[in-house]
Length: 197
Image (tube, rainbow, N blue to C red; front, side, top):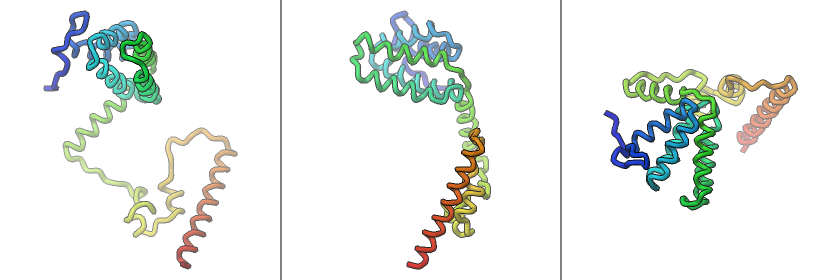
């Protein structure tokens, strides 16, 4: 069974803390802003321990439930949390910060891919699934790659491949290719100088 925390702490409305924490996350998942803010306020009014947990939970929700729906959500929640540390917990302005975080998370587009994938990979490792590495991993930055003679040419052709790529103009792509050609020339020049010394 999963360990249960904060069940013995009762919020102002008479609910156990673990149930209000669960409600907060479910309300945010469903975009139920007023209910989510009420749950957050209940945790805040219960005391410092659940206020600290509120912020930790909001940060987790930003990755677990919002995920790539709004990739900057963890940054926003973290910034609001850091800002809250500049205020007294008893200040009327303090509540604005966690309320804003909750409203923001409720309004975000959501997807749970990071949470699901983390759970899948953890179980694959626990089960002992193999983890074969493809050939392009072995570039000039690995001992195996160096032993295979992999150099900057291989790196740019194979190991530096990015997907999905950005939508760039022809001019931007041409400029990047020019920089890559210059980089290869400079690195080969440096290598030749090292060989002479």
